[in-house]
Image (cartoon, rainbow, N blue to C red):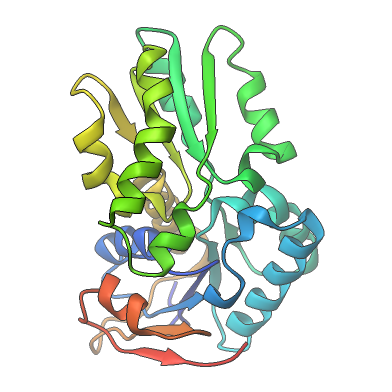
Amino acid sequence: MINNNPIGLFDSGIGGTSIWKEIHQLLPNEDTIYLADSKNAPYGEKSKEEIIQLSFKNTEFLLNQNCKLIVVACNTATTNAIKELRNKYNVPFIGIEPAIKPAALHSQTQKIGILATKGTLNSELFYKNIEQFQDIQIIEQIGFGLVELIENGKINSSEMKSLLLQYLTPMIESNIDYLVLGCSHYPYLIPQIKKILPNNIKIIDSGEAVAKQTKKIVTENVGLREIHKKSIQTFYSNTNPKVLAEILENYYSVIQKDF
């Protein structure tokens, strides 16, 4: 099946580019449109209703660009709004949730840590996911301030190091052997996190799993793009696009647009 329409992705800012990179690596011939709603970041501090309305707004922008599938490249938006999105719009949605299952299944200490936003950790979907792992101690930590620092290009700042030490030290002392990153912004912090964690603690994020699911749905249900010319990767930001361009290593230009 041939479908030349683009794949759409949205996030509360630049973090979902960590998901976009995994998808682009698996599906390099597909056109993509990425929407960074940095003006409203972080979603994790907003109410469920606000998150749903922002997700509707982002979806409608992408549907107006004829996207054939939408990746909700944001843990907070997925855990709070994916059900409403699927009920409202007639397009496939792929969400991103914290990778609790692989961490819980492989943990030797029966203790895992999760670093995520308040909106994700307080969501009904998150509670449903952890209910099935009663034998595992899950140490939750809200990453207050992390998204804001990433959005402002301060990944390697002293403030970032200080916050990560504050959040990760209790997990290390609790003897976790897996750390789950529950926000699509956080993979950009892995180099910083690795400097703090001992080598026996493994880090897990959802990017690869989301990319594989996207490839499966596009291939089996939606349709692949014809390979007759170079694919087009389009990025929109509703604030200063400089940080988004930098995170993309300036390989791609970013269009600043209010939405």
